[in-house]
Amino acid sequence: MKRFLIMLIGIVVFFGITNGENEARFMKSPDIKGDKIVFSYEGDLWLTTTEGGAARRITNAPGIENTPKFSPDGKWIAFSGNYDGSANVYVIPAEGGEPVRVTYQPGTPLVVCWTPDGERIVYRSLVENYIGRDPNLYFVNKNGSAPERLPIDRGRLCSFSADGKRMLYQRRGNEENYWKRYKGGQYPDIWMYDFTTAAFTPISDYVGKNVYPMWIGDMMYFVSDRTNGVSNLYKENLTTKKIDAITAYNDVDVMMPSTDGKTIVFLQDGFIHLLNVASGEVKKVSVQCPSDRWTIRQKSINPKEYIQGVNASNDGKKVAIEARGDIFVIPVEKGETKNLTKSPGTRERYPRISPDGRTVAFFSDKSGEYQLYTQNVEGGAWTQLTTNLDRMVYHPEWSPDGKKILFGNKDLAIFVLDVATKKLTKIDESNQLKNDEFFWETSDYSWSPDSKWICYSFVQYNRNSQIHVYSLEQNKKYAVTNDFFDNLYPCFDKNGDYLYYVSNRNFDILMDFYEDNHVIRTPQTVMAVQMNLLDASVEVSWLNKKSDRTL
Picture 1: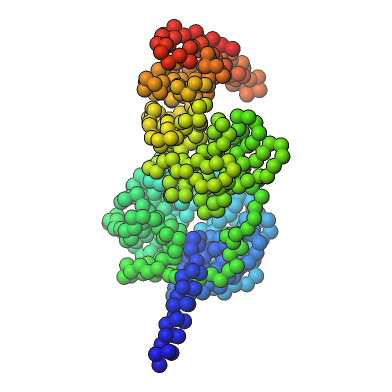
Picture 2: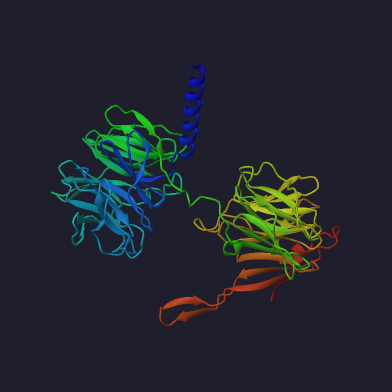
């Protein structure tokens, strides 16, 4: 008996471990009808039950099938697929079968829902949208028909009242925006449309995320980040306007919810969860997706198609390359290409060969945050130089004497690290952005030939960049230019006699005959500042007497 119990426990533990290891995660677009759940995973549609367990793959075409939606009677699944090339809307039996195409148009149609009578499918498409930002919503018969645009200016998601006479819809914005806590001009909002009176009524009044409206009874269930910046499920009484939080996650967003009117299925932390609308109870559904996992299995890839950074040694005999998260050293003429880092689980960036050609400096996220490391160009152990960096970092630059490393970060600051002592010193920082949308980093900096000065540009209040130099001996910065012109890319000549930079000061305006618009053909001019920085004892009087010349 004891022996039998030990064997039984072993079997239970084995299958528990096996199931845990094979539990599917990061599914997309789940939908529910009764005790059935359909979702997209590995680019195919899968079917499981509300009890979880092994899911069954019901499509296996080479392309991608996603956004599946059960029909109201549960007999059909509408989804978006690209069986015939471009994406279009298809319908298959709920248990799987041959797909039937129901739309024939460009614009990347994505299924949104069914009408309550189960006769028509609602999908969104960019077919009439020139800008490609906010799509329109369309009806199409489940058996195929000419598309009919809904009588609204734009829309992304929608849900109907039980009688189909009114509709809640998300008018704009990305329902799964990667910008957390976004409150800009494209924040998602929810409206109601009455098909009988053609009346529009704004429903949401929160400036932020209001997405996935789901009409259940006299309530609207939806997703918002209004409480703590993390997306959770809420419900709003459409009569009293009272809003209550349903879930209270404070780490990972609620994503892609859908409902059959009794249960809401959603994703959180990559796993499927169910919300019982009547009781408010939430449970996680553990699902296994038997698969060969070919997309994530280890394989050999030629990194030459993934090169993201290159740095040559001073003697021109070798090159350090960043490719697919690893650092490679390649001889220019003959020799073996070496993968220095060999770290498939982490990413290494910005390799820089030291002035003597013996060491490579680079950033790696092996500790969880990008830290600065060095390694011999022949290979060997890494030397960690920093331990407390917690922001995105930008290209390191060796000082010419090989004793210090200069780099910037996303906080618009620049730092100097002493390689021997590992002492990190913040040189300067800014609080101005070049452009609110595209330029975030501080990466415009370099060394003087004697390693005693740093030159860099910082954005000023008027969005123009100003050139500065910093003396490491004096621990003091000096402005080389003002902010009247936009000045960029400072660098010293090889002797330190001149500081070169590019200035946007050429306003030789031409008129474009065809466009009837102004054209500045060559706005940038190379400038030079004459100076003597080689003797540290020399007072920097040139800052007031400098000669600023155009080359």
